[in-house]
Image 1 (tube, rainbow, N blue to C red):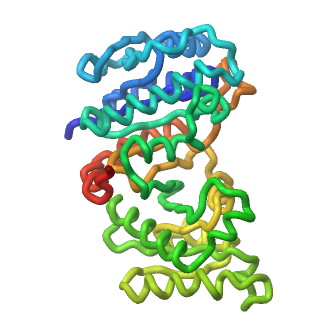
Image 2 (image 1 turned 135 degrees about the vertical axis):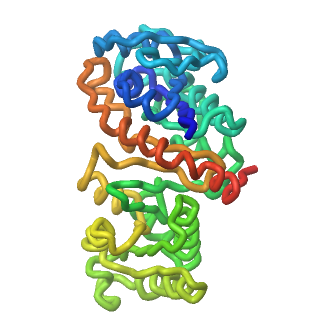
Image 3 (image 1 turned 60 degrees about the vertical axis):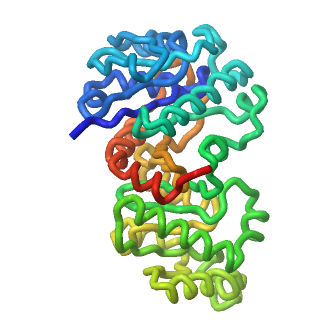
Length: 339
């Protein structure tokens, strides 16, 4: 079976992205399981290799076709934007420009079919905004680049898939979005994603919003007026869906194997559950795109950037997930054709 080609972005050049990418791609496993191609700036990658003291060469290329994919050498699609001497750990417009350009080039390569998946390192929102980007982060940027309006996040942790009915909103705004139409839509999108990634008969649980699931309306009525009716509507269409289930138990039940996926109702509800059980093993997968994208689930860690102390387990997990999920890339193109 042909090894998948993975485009791995360096992320923010002055964050920990270059370091965790270098550590991951310099390991023998990288070329044993895939054909990895870093995307970013060669001077930035070389500086990270020097900081880490790695025995790895850098092969700067201008196209995927030029990559060698040889052990001991990290191929990089060199963008020629960021130099190798930007101050570590500081918001910087040039760094933001380089981070955005890496995402753009990796995504275009995936859309052209030159790479099988995109694996992303963390970006800094202030830096990309300083560079003129209007996006809140990777996911929104990828949605625009691929012409998709169905994009959402799926966390993959120890075999459990976690989805999000709302994402980057204040808690007050997120609660306001808990309506029957919105939850029913989120259920159907999560169910579709489970099928796309190889589970033909998935079991999906929907988390409750309020303590104890609202206790019959005593602690809030969102379960009664919105969540339960959405679950029943999905069941009526033949979907194997359960809930609302109190959030203090549903994720544990999912990890035990009772469910294949859990729909979290707001950002931190799912993030806290997954990162507590396995911070370094939680992988973010963007669903709703015509391309496969996996990512680390943490930020740029400016406070330790350039020290060589960054833990790269999250990038290893994201890389391995891309290898495992690459066979489903054709399903993504069929399910989410984009614009």
